[in-house]
Image (tube, rainbow, N blue to C red; front, side, top):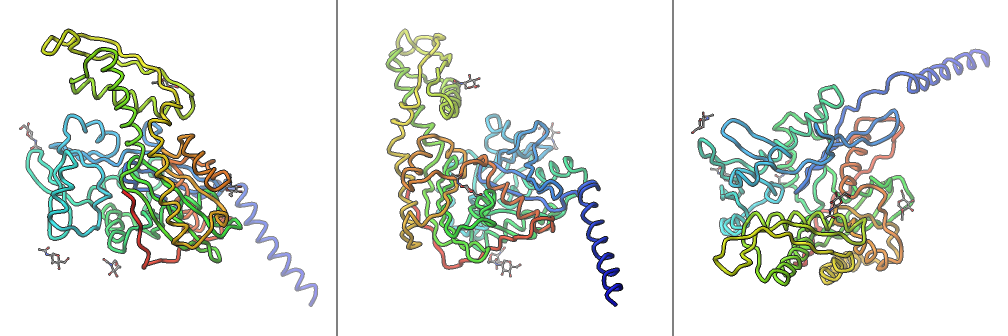
Length: 437
Ligand SMILES: *[C@@H]1O[C@H](CO)[C@@H](O)[C@H](O)[C@H]1NC(C)=O
Ligand SMILES: *[C@@H]1O[C@H](CO)[C@@H](O)[C@H](O)[C@H]1NC(C)=O
Ligand SMILES: *[C@@H]1O[C@H](CO)[C@@H](O)[C@H](O)[C@H]1NC(C)=O
Ligand SMILES: *[C@@H]1O[C@H](CO)[C@@H](O)[C@H](O)[C@H]1NC(C)=O
Ligand SMILES: *[C@@H]1O[C@H](CO)[C@@H](O)[C@H](O)[C@H]1NC(C)=O
């Protein structure tokens, strides 16, 4: 009897061993579920490789790991991503961006008139929803979820060409503040291009997962997401492996664009001081805008940069033919920080609010996670670190933290060994976001 048991035992052991060796020596299975970050300004797609246990963010034809969330219409084509972005200057009225701000939202006609004034394309009202008016060879309207679907299709194709297999299943992230209707319309966008959404997760939860916090011994995680135009702060509480969003606050009008704008104002003032006139040509303003944007990015790593921008100025007096001049100006990191000091301080207001609403002392926050390109700015990291008295988690690229977390969730949904810990989210339907504008 004992012998039979041990034979059976050995057989089971052998089976396990075969399975284990199989894991080791067979080519690892292809990921079957992709993770999608459909962002307001950029989108990314990632997968979890079960064999190595790594997340891979998939690049486009040129290896870029995020594509602009832009869709452009021509008489013959619908373009998405970089190709669409390239048409933004020549065909602004048919190049749609920011569609995520409209998806699944209920509007009054007056709201949309205001919104439409902010964009080079037309936003129109249709029975409570927003639509975009496109005029190529004929005039038609498209829905925000259609725009979303074209971006999702682009990412689906990027994943398929990289993995060499068709992809039908995905996990997608949405802002924590999205209500059920916005979530449904996001799912509908994916369904339009044949993607079955296995789970929708909140962006801050995804960012926390990118740092492995779903497996770590933490209870309170604060996520600061500072992008091009918006700030979102979320307080997450982990209860038995599940994340609950306890409080949200933010500022819809604070982000990288504002910091660049301050730098542009400064550059314009310096042009006026050096040459006595301001640039008036559209191309000159455009070149200056691009130069300060590049300078802002460089100042993250360097302590000073030299702006050099060829301009065309009416230096001989108003009405004189414009003469080419070279504008040169050194910008130090310190100057950049001074120009934006008041804006940087505004970041702390929603941080304080979520702590109050979550009834938590700042010392009770176990980890602080930074998301969004603007959190690379050294001064912003400093302000957050000194507020909490500890360093934030920054080892994951802040532009890819969300897609990294979504890809991990996609790996879990795809049954990828050896990940067993699933990060469920407890829905919090009564939560409202506090906005500082
Ligand atoms: C308008 O919206 C309502 C509610 O969402 C819906 O019941 C109705 O069918 C819609 N009407 C049209 C013409 O689409
Ligand atoms: C669109 O219009 C242009 C010129 O008006 C014409 O050359 C082109 O064939 C048209 N394209 C389609 C798809 O109808
Ligand atoms: C969202 O979709 C679910 C499932 O299809 C449905 O039961 C629910 O009523 C929808 N909610 C809203 C607000 O559209
Ligand atoms: C920023 O850095 C890049 C590469 O490090 C360099 O090519 C570029 O000229 C710099 N731009 C400015 C404005 O300093
Ligand atoms: C970041 O997160 C990890 C958990 O994965 C933690 O061990 C680490 O101490 C955190 N903090 C910093 C500053 O990196």
